[in-house]
Length: 144
Image (cartoon, one colour):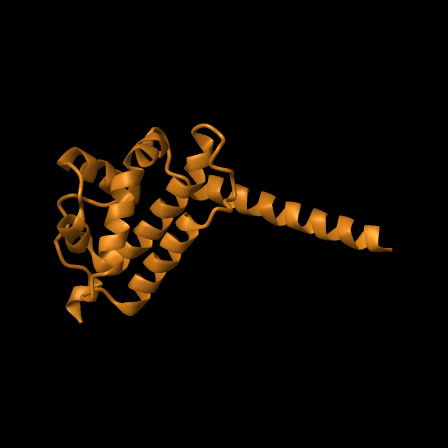
């Protein structure tokens, strides 16, 4: 009886993990962007911390960024980090997904202001998040 329960819980956890991995594969950056995202991860982490501390951004955006940083700090990942390249791919995909939402709400201005890396790195970030480099510096959050 207990074995059935443990097996059921194990199968449920495995099924949930598979669903999350499939979801990550569906929202992952296409082409070579995933490799760029993994390469940019240190600059992205500094960017996230700076954006989360920016009081000009809406509370919802800052909460989303804080939750993302908590996930990244958590030692338990969807794909273990000790696996070469793909171990950090889930982190890069989740960061890109959250940043896309942040950019839709806050615009490109805060990202440009807080970006700690090079211009080439910022261009890669824009490709990763689907941003237009020619877009105006303000977003919906700046309008009101």
